[in-house]
Length: 285
Image (tube, rainbow, N blue to C red; front, side, top):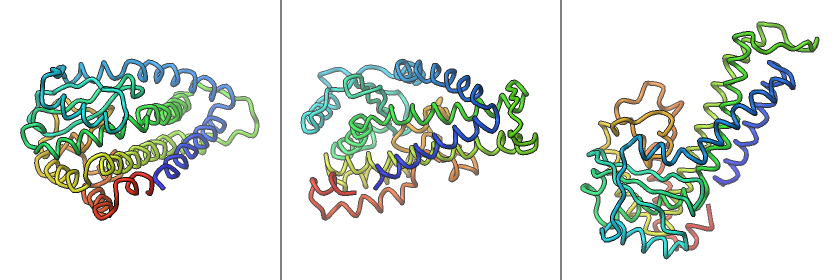
C-alpha cells in the first residue's frame, strides 16, 4: 500500500508542476525551471552524501569494531553490498543512510545511539537504514525534490515578473499570484508525505530483517532521548534521519511539514508485525 501511495504522490507532484508551469510561465517557464532544478538535483544526487557526512563531521568506523560486525551480518542476510559506516560525535541518539544506490551507500549513527541502545536495538536501527538503501529512497527523494524545487522556482519567477507569456488564455495577475504563493506550499506538503511513506517502508524492512519488537524498543528510546536534537541539524537533511533530528526545537507547524510519521504511528504499525512471519512482514503491506 505504501508503494502505491508513494507512486500516487509522485504523480501528483508531476501534475502540479505541469499545471503551475503552464499557468505561470507557459511552456518556456516549464522548461527553464525544470532544467535548472534538474541540474541542482543532479549535483545533489551524486555528491550530497559526501556533503552531508562532512556537515556532521562523521568519522569512518573501523572494520574491527563491533558495529562493523553487526552491519556485516545484516547485509549478508539482506544480500546487499557492505555500506560505508560512520560515527557522528553527538550524544543525541539518531542515525541516517545516504548514497545514491546500494553500491554507493553510507550509514551513519551518533555516538549517543551506540551508548543508549542494546545490540538488538542497534541491529533494528541499522536494518531500518538498510531498508532505505534497498528501496533506493535517496533516488525517490531526489525526484520529488526536482519537481518541488521546480514549482518553487516557477513561483519565484512569477512573483518577480521574470517570466512573461503572451498567451491570451493565461489567468489574470491575481490568479497567478495565488498560484505562486499556494502551489509551492502544496508541493512541500506532498514531498513531506512521500518521505513519511518511505519511513513506514523502512520500518517494515527492519521488521523483516531483524525483529519488530527490537525496533519498537529502539523508537521508544529515540523518542524519549532525542528532545535536544542533533547538533547542526538542518531542514535539507532532516528527512534522512530515523527520527526527527530537531527534537523540541521543531516549530509549531511541525505536524504539517514533518518528514516522519509520529513515533506512536510507527510503533502501532510495527506491533501489527509482531505475530507474523518475517516473510509476510516483507511481502505484505
